[in-house]
Image (cartoon, rainbow, N blue to C red; front, side):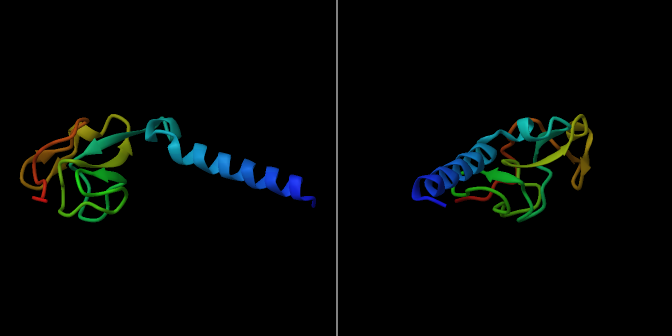
Length: 98
């Protein structure tokens, strides 16, 4: 394989990987929705508020600013301990102090 062909192959692979990573969750799976406040500690799918980066970074169970993907239409009807429910919007409950 020539240097040019190798560079093109690497560039194509990198572009494909970056595209997959940058797609929003809903574009990746239309049958799922982001549901805030339902993830167990360290089990969120992504963003868990200030000071965190992505998956697995929630600090407490049911952290309000951490989300998980759930089947579409089930988020707000989920019953959680303490008479809590999931939310389609970020919540301020159970957010650890930074």
